[in-house]
Image (cartoon, rainbow, N blue to C red):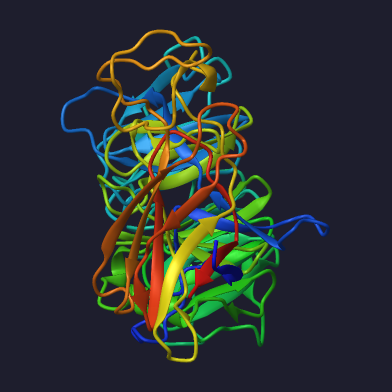
Length: 503
């Protein structure tokens, strides 16, 4: 060949910063996964899960997005701007439990007997019915007409108590045990900092009251009036960016603070987990729109943060961030994710749709899901070098139309077929361009300011497991970044190390 390959790293996290010259790589719609100890490389890059439709909750006019979800008795419940719904089986059978009129920032919680929904203006109570899968249940009862509840943007459940923040104050309050009745004496103040309470959230049976400038943890002390007492010495001075900017799972609780830093805690000591790249990615965005959700996918506990048009995901397993992008919507469309029927079900930010997140789906409900990797900068001591070849190692040989095998199509020139006849094992077809998936390679010699599309390479038909994804004739540069994109209906698993030949 006249040249020798050397290994070069691919991006394993989101690393774009404001320092154009000294940014890291970028990982969009993919995440890093530790490979087995005896694998050829320590890290595999895995494509993010795609989406396919399970159900549409309602076809009522002017119905908005799915606002929130929860699971009760192994069944998922969803609230939209127009109603409360339940999915009763894995086939996506929908039961409408009652009509509502709430805003898109509604939140709900359950104590096992009732579901309470709040949206900053009104509150609703729905009592779960034993026969609601077969009998039309009563509509959720609007109980803001009473003096029991103050307006609240968030609600959580701790030890059978519903807990709310009192909007525009530093106070929070709770219901009686296993009830939706509120004793006026149950109102408490998170007073370590003189700030407004924006959200309440429960994690590991502790109650966290999030303010603009602080987070105060409480525990159930069994008090006569207020059941909750402050945990002394555990107040955090970080605050929260928005009422929806906190989520938790069995691996911890994470939130976006009002100063733009993401924290995580599995107890009472917060640890900052956001990086310079995440801070720069959030710069200039309205943090008051932030929404955090938590779910586990293929053993990876993810905390997914969406702010305006951008979505970033933190992987607790690897402690790395990656980005998600929807080609038609911008940010990832999940407003909530719950686990039911052995599936991850997401609520749609763009309408009353429930989608399934799945690794073996390579579109967003039929729309493109583009894997997008930008490499770190490759350079050789500031010398100009000719880039003779660039090669990726990845899973190939899984493309092609259903029923179409490598033996039926001549792949020597897959861009332009001519009319011919069956000749041995090769059949070419007049005017047909096979639907073989490809990788598109672009490169930038100015650190990502401008990109030149070099071309594409096929990823192989079914069974073509030896297909090499190699690009040649790449010109010369002092420093270079490569951009790799896959949009086809094919699995996306790459070794996190490429091969580059310089001359």
